[in-house]
Length: 100
Image 1: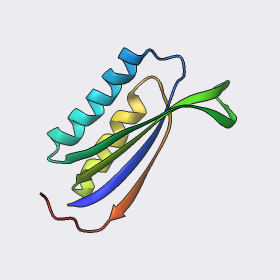
Image 2: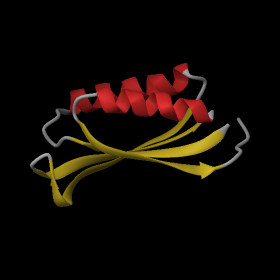
Image 3: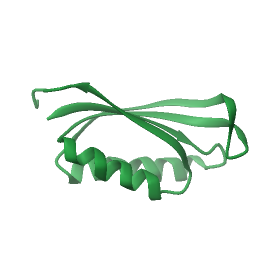
């Protein structure tokens, strides 16, 4: 298993319940595909350096998880088809991680 981090930029127009629903769905994808969600870090509403879909603010969330490499493709596929997610980036943090 490898350790990954995914940073999501969500629409500022989403309600708190909708944001939590999106994050619950993404966490479910990680756990369904034999991954381990380590951290869901809410960075909150931030100003953007440039407009994204005509918005100057966005809600940031950072996901840290352990997963097989194939899971990242499935997670990113789900992110792409989810309404309300403007941008995302996934980074590999560690090559091999011991599963606790």
